[in-house]
Length: 120
Image (cartoon, rainbow, N blue to C red; front, side):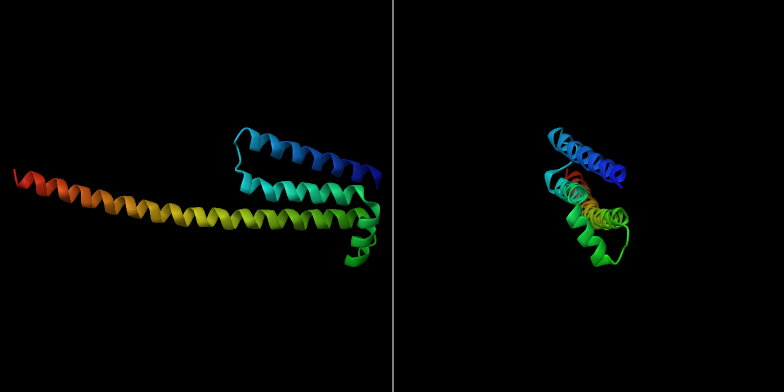
């Protein structure tokens, strides 16, 4: 049990460092890094607090506390991934709307150019 908890602690610390480095280098925006940072922090706290781990395992009805930790970690990361999927979907919709507006502006510009050339 201790080996798994130590591994998850190391993994969460690495994730925190990776997120902070990515924000510092501007590879990820701050508002998107908050969910990853929170997920790593939750994983770190739960993997280091045996009483919280036992309480979560009892609450979920799972007899093995590390399995409860992996279940909680999986759920937290699924929530983060769902949040990012919603953001990506919104960006795709905004990108389509922007492409349509650019096409309309190009059409109007082409029409204006044709009218000015016709009046010459």
